[in-house]
Length: 114
Image (tube, rainbow, N blue to C red; front, side):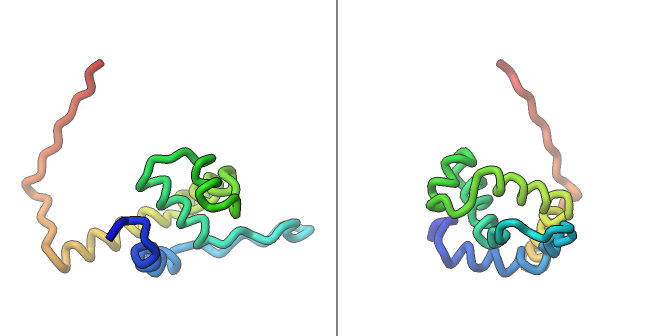
């Protein structure tokens, strides 16, 4: 089963949806356009993470239902709201419950050369 199959996206969405902030509807004139569904934006973000495609390509993959600008804005909105940090904490806790997470003897080292 691939990471972009509907079943995988559905499971991921169930974990992410409760973490999302309520949209800001405080604009004095209201919204001029309907807000693009969070689920569609989430799918675009997952495609970006899995494939490394550009935001413009993802816009085309999603049949231009959402713009690349909206995808980036929603990602930034969710980063600011701490959605991905809370998701990471839930994933680590789940992994610890299922497998056991002992980071006491982990060491990282890296270098970058041209």
